[in-house]
Length: 178
Image 1: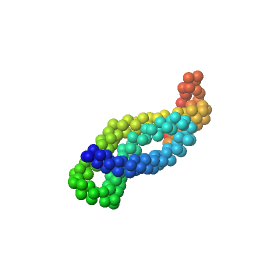
Image 2: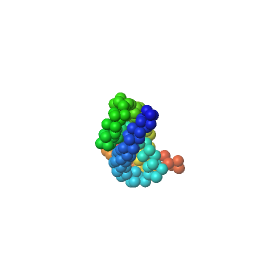
Image 3: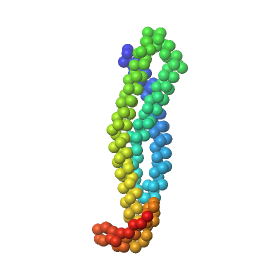
Image 4: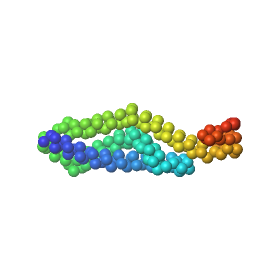
C-alpha cells in the first residue's frame, strides 16, 4: 500500500515538474540563442557547431531550471491534491503527514543531488568547452576574412596589417598598432 501511495504522489509531482523544466529551459535557451545568433550567423558557423554550442549551454541552464521546476512540481502537485480533498481522504485512511511528505522529500533530495552535480562538475566543464568553441568560431572566421596588404580595423582598439602570406597560411611582416 505504501509503495502505491508513494508512486501516486510522485506522479502528481512529476508532471508539473516536467512541464516546468521544459518551459523554463526553453525560455532561458531562447534568450541565449538570441544573444549568440548575431555572432554565430555573422561568422558563418555550421549547424553542427551551433548544436554543440547549445549542448554546452544546457548544463548551466539546467542548474537554474531544475530547482525552479522542482518547486513548481511540488507546489502544483500538492495544491491539486489539496484542492481535490485527497489530503483529507489520506488522513481518513490513516495516512499521516509524514507519509505524505516522504515521497516529496525524496523527490526534492534527488533533484538537489542532480542540480549539485550539474553545478559542481558538469557546468564548469561545459562552460569551458563553450567558451573555447565560441572563441574558435569567432577567431577562425575573423582570421580567414583578413587579406594581405589591407588594414584590418574590426578588432577592438587595434589595427592589424600584414604584407604577405606564405603557402602554409602564416602571415609575414605583421604590423599591429593600438
